[in-house]
Length: 497
Image (cartoon, rainbow, N blue to C red; front, side, top):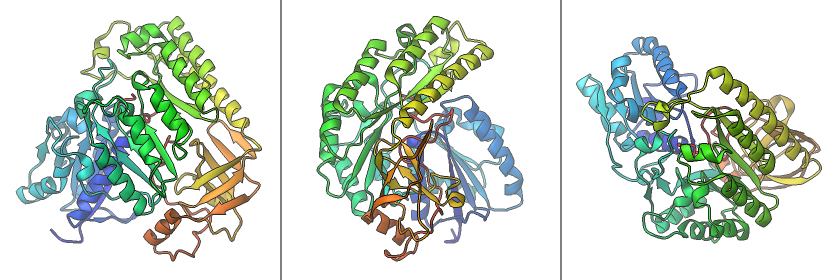
């Protein structure tokens, strides 16, 4: 294979997929491929897919259709499809899109370079889907998209049986990494310059169940607090069933664990939670919220909510609105129920008309937007420390702003002077001057700033000497760490834990 072959990876879905795509990029570069320039046609296009929602299928096949004439015009171009939708559809992908060269599943992403080469030599599609994990993904080469923030998987798979979710069937049973391996990777990414780490798992706080330690997750959080140079620790997504008091204590007592929690609710109706096979009820969820707020009054709590689950009545929906009012989430990622073949919910009685679901969905969005706005307005006049990001503010250039995340993961757009020397990875303390439902603005100028090793790492990666500032407002478009931008798409974990 020529050293000049180029690639591009397109990612759909949750944080686990984003991190898997970093590994796919690392595997390809380890095999001699180079990342394609933005304005160039790549030799290899890899789709890393999601299967959580129904429109994922349409989106994939639509994109494959658009690529067919591009491939016809570029002999030797290859297309690969991986991820959850590949695990689900398998040979159906090649049947519907015979110009696809490689299909691989969630358990064998390490096979991608070999499958591409085999398809090229044999001139026929390669479909390889494993039923069990070949090797823990974190042992694979990784091309991390960010110089300052890193994903670290602590487990893969899920042992839950939520009736709406297809992901456990595609990702398999939960497999935990040993704590020493996790901490070694955290130390390694910090040594490379990262100041923020997000611990990932389909059900992240069930960590330790495989090796019999029910407090393994809280111990892991406390151990992260001992790592010099690690300034921010986040995690996603926890399940209310496994959210124990020792985890709350570890969050509150470990300074570098951020005052932020994303905990999926799914429904406020205890009757529907039972039908969903969610092993908690409304009172349990609100009890966790109350304990978190007592231990960390400044914590921002976000959630996932499904509207229109089969059999949902107006009374059930009112229970969801009740929880939203009481919990006062900083943000909620709301979804209209999507029927997924192969899940128990797909065949349940009481499938709701789309117009009913849409009307309830809009009421929920309106309520949550009002709460988010009120909660954000309470922060006007406060100082927050922001980790400067890249790719978080689309209009920053024209408005002479930079963007980043506060400790509680709220998105902050802040004004900078022309001679600002801040780089992605540096820290800026700013005063909030304006609040919108989904972001904060700080236009009174930077009060204090702190250059960091992460900023140096960003500068080195982008060919800038450590003393040279990044151009104001020119941000580079990496996937956001922590809670993604508000949108009706799966964000809270692969299976919306």
